[in-house]
Figure 1 (cartoon, rainbow, N blue to C red):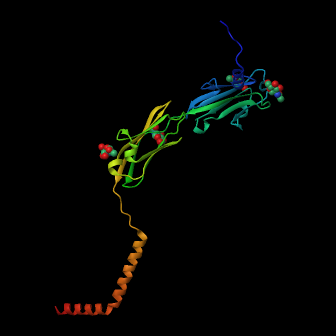
Figure 2: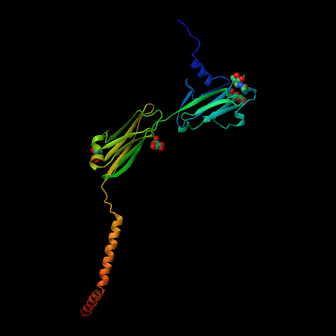
Figure 3: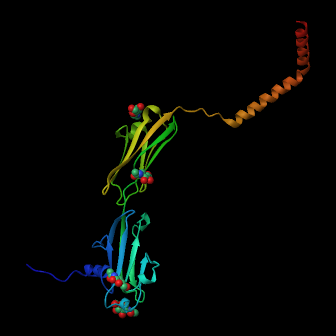
Amino acid sequence: MKLVFSPPPLLLLLYCATQTCGVRIQSNPVINSEGVIQIELEDTVSLLCLADDDSEAHNNKELVWLRNDAVVSLKDENKKSNSSVCISPVIHDDNGATFTCRLSTNATDEASVTLNVIYGPELNGSEQVTAEEESKLFLECDIWANPPVSFVLWTLNGSAVDLLAGGFTVTNGGYTSQLTANSVEKRLHEGTYECTATSPMYGERSKSFSVKVTDKTIKFPLMPMIAGLVVVALTALLAVVSRWKRIMKCCKSCQKQRVRS
Ligand SMILES: *[C@@H]1O[C@H](CO)[C@@H](O)[C@H](O)[C@H]1NC(C)=O
Ligand SMILES: *[C@@H]1O[C@H](CO)[C@@H](O)[C@H](O)[C@H]1NC(C)=O
Ligand SMILES: *[C@@H]1O[C@H](CO)[C@@H](O)[C@H](O)[C@H]1NC(C)=O
Ligand SMILES: *[C@@H]1O[C@H](CO)[C@@H](O)[C@H](O)[C@H]1NC(C)=O
């Protein structure tokens, strides 16, 4: 059996980047072998940068933290020989962010870590949806997740939606999954829909939609109708004016009649 003690060059480089060379980083949760910290959304990461005993930071030189090349502002007492940074809560935007610690005087002495923020799709609960006969049905589920969801299934009344029979289209993007039907029919489209996303890390999550199909409301074309009414009203007015005398006479005779009776 042969033992090999010299590590391959790549490993040596990684070791240098995340561990020593003047400064090194300790963290909770721990850094994996690729220099990455895996953390759940809204959790807390604490990072501690330590200057080696013989490094310049121990001769009163300062430590600096960078988040993606932007300097993190630190209190003075948090700069000498060791320096801590806390990320709380971790947000979506922290995914892929790199935190680097270095001596303020010597940029060649640095160590860095990258965050891998994991989160599942936010699917839960139930939504009430009403759609008119012959209108468009549009249902949408948020499937944004890290790692990405591996599978999305849409069901209607418990069984997979029949794309052909229902005239459905399913569109899956990185953020959402959408189910559409262009012309709603009560017989085909009313019922309980559910979208279920399968995450390699969080398992299945789903959201349901209770879809009610209502009768088509007849929409009157409003402007032509108003124009029509105006014409009718004017005609009636003209007719009244031209017959005014006759009406007056008529009324007078009515009164006479009433008086007589
Ligand atoms: C960090 O430095 C301070 C003094 O600046 C020291 O008291 C403390 O023990 C150090 N912490 C660690 C973890 O080395
Ligand atoms: C920076 O640190 C490296 C490694 O510790 C050292 O070789 C180099 O001389 C330093 N540079 C300066 C300008 O102090
Ligand atoms: C349900 O999902 C919504 C977003 O779709 C989220 O704001 C809410 O916190 C979730 N509720 C639970 C109990 O997970
Ligand atoms: C789904 O179930 C509901 C309630 O049982 C029923 O009214 C509806 O017609 C069903 N939808 C389809 C498309 O079968």
